[in-house]
Length: 420
Ligand code: EPZ
Image: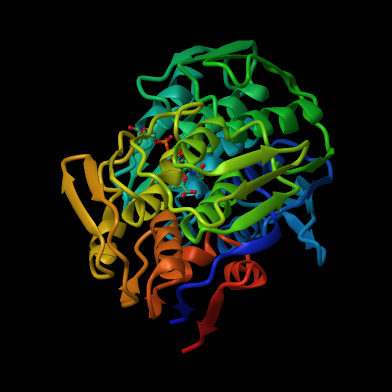
């Protein structure tokens, strides 16, 4: 298994480009199942999860042509299978996103029920309940979700008991071709949901209210091909900005989305960084300064994102003062803490809150990545630790960060991939 070898102590300086957002690209690729016309999706990040989603679409009979810039042309007219098999779904939970489009456009779907994952049980009950409200017959048979509808789904008013990003996305896609009006209440407001809605509108869908907690969709009979470019990745952007802050450097992230990061930028400024924002770039300067500890409490957008929680635990670990980090979205998203303790961090976890006492220098050590964002925080910790850190199981990192060693290396980090 590949490992990352990092020698800490370098301040990061320079310019890095944000890739397309994984969590916008995945639902948008699933949405291509809603039209039989050729459709082109651009600015896809070169990530394992994207490859898995393209494999999944290909396994259903879609024509998939990818160019060297990771722009993909899909032809759904050749779909001959409406099934997402376990061997693919078990490697990527986001495969659940094909369920809504398949039922809505093809009237049937068999999608393996995603299991839990490292960060929590992550049920999909709200996805299934919403589809039932739209008239789908949903059975769980032998670990598979078997969904069927005679004719078209019917528009429905759906209230989400919990804010769910992919739940909102699945039902948004299902409603786009349903017969009549659907209203999604307590819907997710994440920018990736907005990006999906904008892509569906470009395909001919009638959607309003996306980006608010109430989304209205008037179903149409057919959706059309289009060419759509995926939004930049706000979590990757935030991760590079934290890398600059943690190493007392100065980094400019270009080709990014500056309007979806208010909560993260506010916390970086509270930590003492100076942040400058342009039309499509964000520059963070922490040269010559140590960060101050900040308190974090994760919640659905526009509040502080859970996907940036681990990165701020790493920042607090070397900051001045004590930072309280509370994880309100997932029940087990502090696995990075045990690995950071191996590097000398002073962190105590009580329930869903980590009390991070800064000030101590971290020391390099062999550590293990556990989930996508947690592994990014280990890279950040290694960048500022004394000595060498070897990070194992970095396939977690490759799922969410494109060419991570090249990008950090271009900013001055001493980082390399050890193949074995
Ligand atoms: C999406 O996951 C993201 N993944 C996650 O990013 C992100 O952490 C999460 O949203 C929260 O922002 C993608 O977009 C592919 P949820 P999702 O449904 O949709 C509960 C990453 O690192 N829930 O918003 O699966 C659930 O257990 C990943 O890129 C139900 O109870 O998350 C959780 O506590 C990690 N029933 C809460 O809602 C349901 O039917 C929010 O989950 C659905 C969700």
